[in-house]
Length: 162
Image 1 (cartoon, rainbow, N blue to C red):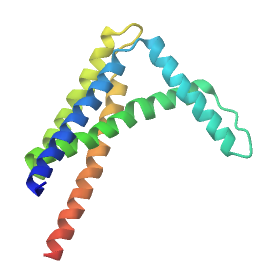
Image 2: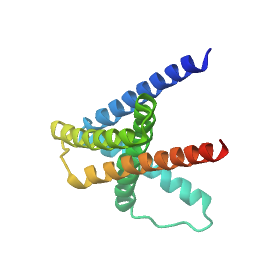
Image 3: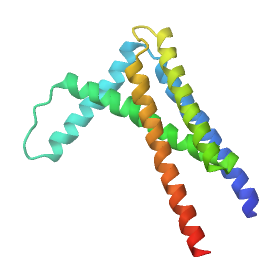
């Protein structure tokens, strides 16, 4: 396979992964509050068991606080961090212009976060929260920023080796 063809294939793989991940985030937004809480509760229980297994001292955790942190860090920040990376890779593959990629990626991150929160208005026992949208955007922007930094370093290294 030629290099040009390979890049075309990779670009569409990024696009598919990005669309799938955004779709998953939006599907999670449509879950009822009860289902969402159950799922994050399972993750919280596993997290507490792993921490206690790995430590010599058994920690006393306030389940509700750990549950809240898991929901915000993993459910919001973490998922949007991944979507931000995929967004950057996708837009960068299609535009090849770092400035345009940053603008488009940032704008789309805000839009994806807004839609995710608005969708929660249609789910039972869920609601729109500005703080969640801000956490979503922070995860998205950090994922994007790391990609920008890596891209900048790679370009700088390449230009110095030329």
